[in-house]
Image 1 (cartoon, helix red, strand yellow):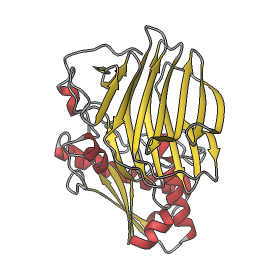
Image 2 (cartoon, helix red, strand yellow; image 1 turned 60 degrees about the vertical axis):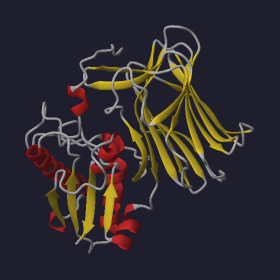
Image 3 (cartoon, helix red, strand yellow; image 1 turned 135 degrees about the vertical axis):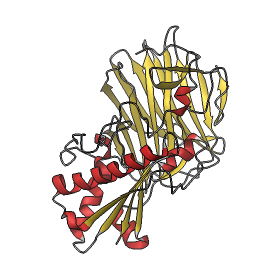
Image 4 (cartoon, rainbow, N blue to C red; image 1 turned 90 degrees about the vertical axis):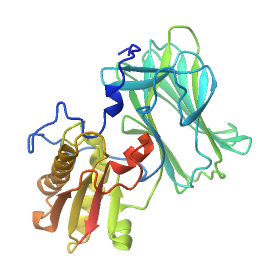
Length: 347
């Protein structure tokens, strides 16, 4: 789908987690079967960088990136906002370092693709510590992951693609293991990889030939945390940004399966564990509707744990707190993404 530029973006700047139009009533959503979803990717929990371009106006430079090469343009329409390159250029997120364990996620739309790429390049000093090429042709993508200034390949793979929809791509670096995912499916899994300290990040869009475009709908870097059982045992609270819902709805997205499955395993291994499930939103939209939506989303998580994973419902209680307990500012996309969350509290 091609997104046409438009100046009618003021209302779109308010598009958030609690979008009113299309909001479902309590209990209406039919939940996906999460027990059968092959869930390998768990997004990092501590957001280090996030941008969905909701605070950017047409004609502006993206405030949270340094731009080099061709300037991208903001396209908005149909409830979608996309930072789009028509020629080769680079984005440098306002990040000064990455931790040892982290995740990278981006939603990328290729248009009229013949020969175009997006690449994630992680630098240590002047050297490329890791590069991930995602090279698109009309019906497929070639993945190349390399380290040590591109002198050692970790993987090369070709994957069939449908470019009518954006690709959700992700990289997970955890304890010397490097994994690559496309639309939730794992395609690369290399181990015993030692990366030096990362001090600069580049997202390169390379376009060979006129009429093509590479667009970004969201970009997120986050620090990975230990699994649910470790965190809930140590601190009594597990904060998740990996439980996702359809916009304005309490219907869980299939991408939530990894976190839900982790919570279910923790409850199974510790039969005395009881949890309060809290739903939280950002402050965009009507406060009362945010409160109701957060309550229904917390209830949806409980319902899935009980009906699909056979957890005793008496062990789970729920609360919807709306935007009343922010953990970050609601003035930026990154802050709002931090505030949209589900928390599990040991009782």
